Image (cartoon, rainbow, N blue to C red; front, side):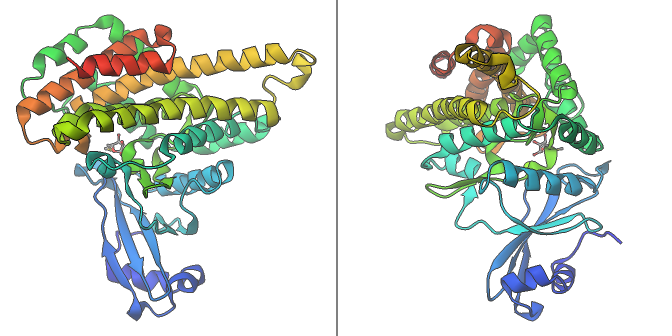
Length: 412
Ligand code: SR1
Ligand code: MG
């Protein structure tokens, strides 16, 4: 029977799993087990043995951030495990390897990433990561393309959509906290003192809210591909030159631009919060680096998507037979699809920028700022750029224009 495990109980259980004993040593008396979770939902343990270490993630039956007044099904671990397996296949090496899954205990044992650190912390600390934008752009392109009918057999794709559609409560969190709560006075919302004029500006903009609802409709009902579902800088672990994507428990089938938009929003929030974290002499250089990562993400996303389009288009969509001897029209079709993905990504990006400053779950980029006046000023820039993105997502177009917008709001 399920129960949240103590470090001692966890060691006892894992000692009977040959795959774990083989990796870290077979005698649990020689193991050190420590609960280190500081996320919103789960228990996370590091288990260190004489031969190596593993990470264990165990789902709790409620939202850790809120407490047992908000129950959450344990079956999300089942979907997370399935997501990790698919991501490993679609972008080999991009996610931690899974060693063991225990469905009853809602527990996944996986690769311990070391010396990786959570990317959000590295960005707050002003550290750079080599190859970051390229890695993330390729991850988004490979998972988007290879999880869709551009690549998968139609029947396999439908079966997978059916499998993941059992995961209802997790998308419901995103539907409420990301797409809905920021735009009215929802109970769990909170924001920095003094932001009220900006917040009421957003909440009284009916066209903006209608655009957000249109994007929610796409998120909830468009099953283009398997998305990570929560691709923020806390779901990425990096060294100075290597990164991995973790934590896909918000997995679902959704629009291709969703992960891209959430990801870019988190680099923009890192960008806008930097004046509170850097000495003036380092500020411009580091902010430029953050914008260059966004540029790389889009560039590499589109380059990799085009490459896969040319080399791996084996699904039912845009079959080569329709474009025989018409290379240019196939390339045009790909360009039109990429433009749509970009438009959606800009909209999702703006919404993520709103929810992280207005809804329940804020991020450390802003929350770590002690000076409330500075925090409010930086959050206001972030909120206003988010609104501009939602309003103009269909016409914004190039990355250069997106980066220009960021520079403009940063100078306000
Ligand atoms: C109640 S869960 C709040 C947030 O934490 C997760 O990491 C997701 O981002 C979710 O929206
Ligand atoms: Mg998470």
